[in-house]
Image (cartoon, rainbow, N blue to C red):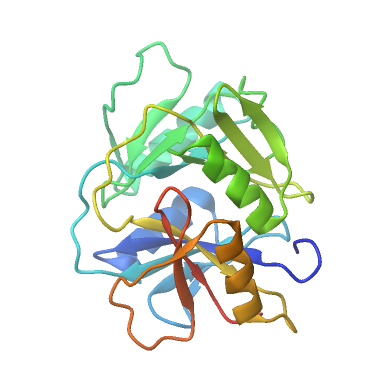
Length: 244
């Protein structure tokens, strides 16, 4: 839980052409339990109190361009890294080239809908102890890292050369932003964060607080829904759900 009555990171949500297939892929890669999502689609349940849910929601929009966010999966050994890569390929993933150096110690893959992710080597000390999902690695500015630190109440664990990273005081996955150069905007993002105040919190007060930090209200055709749709200072969409 974040400081006071501020929001919690409930889930990272994927827009998916085939939510069930994509959910099964990530369930197999991460070893997470799969369930029906209360709103729509499917969800991978958190495996511990430092983990967030992963939702897969239906969309008719095709994927365009490289995502601004991806998972960095950790490895305990070279053999463990190879097992994760092999498992991902068996489940429908594939190798991709996004301009990485062939000598890099991470393997770049895409899931069955083309969402990029990395399987990092065991010598990555920055992600040590962060869990299987070592980081949600994002394209973004220093300012947006500061925004999310305040939004979630997570302290900065890296702030150098316009690159930032935050992590919950309880531990778990980091969220990082790589600084310039930035990927071009390609319309609505395939991945977004879902936030919610804790039980007993005030959704509208939380929306107002996030707006005061630099978020903006946006309309993506959501209609009359129970959650607020906002964008962070870099224009990335996120949702503020009802308290839970």
